[in-house]
Image 1: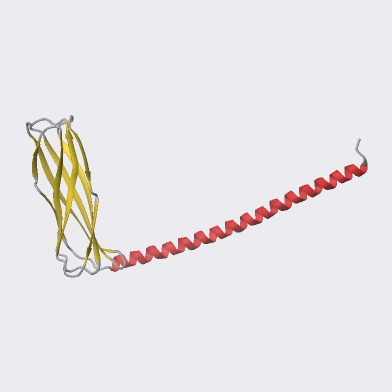
Image 2 (image 1 turned 60 degrees about the horizontal axis):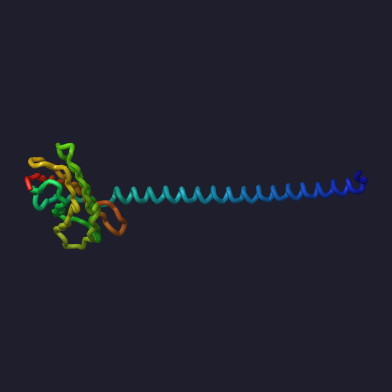
Amino acid sequence: MQSAEEKTRKSKFLTVVLLTLLLIGAGFSVYLWGELAYTQASLLTEQMQRMMYQQTVQQVNTTTPKVTISARLVPTPPVKNITPNTVTFLTGYLEAINLTDLYYPSVLIANFTVKHYTANPNTTIECSYIPYQQVYLTKGVELVQIPFGVFPLSVYGGKPEDEIYITVRATVQIYWEPIHALMTEQTAECIIKLKVVPP
């Protein structure tokens, strides 16, 4: 059996342990509340700065001078004969003109996409291309020609007399560079016809 003194000592020890755990828990709670308050304040500040930035960008974009340019895609050649089961390439260029009213310095960005179509469900077409080109413009530039290429263009399972249509689309955007504000956006498209001929 335990003596009264031993029980008192164990009771005091248990009280000290429980008080220590309570103080540690309270300390963690205070620390976590402080961290939460700091994080909330930082998040609120970040959201306010983001809103101010978005408003500024919107105001700049609405007041940026808008210009009109012309863009066209020129395939070279527009029709190409291929044999069945071929790996080939297609080329052409994007031409942007009427650049005299731009504000400088500016940058022209061209984003390309390529799609294909054939009526033969047994034909497999795979292609790769460069999706993005960028040109820095300075005062006096009146014409920009940017090459595009589709390579490799693999055609499998085609038979003579099949026709395959490759559609190349370019979206041209010109930004006034000091503030990266959009001055114009134009889209151009061309279709290149592939004719499958006997080997």
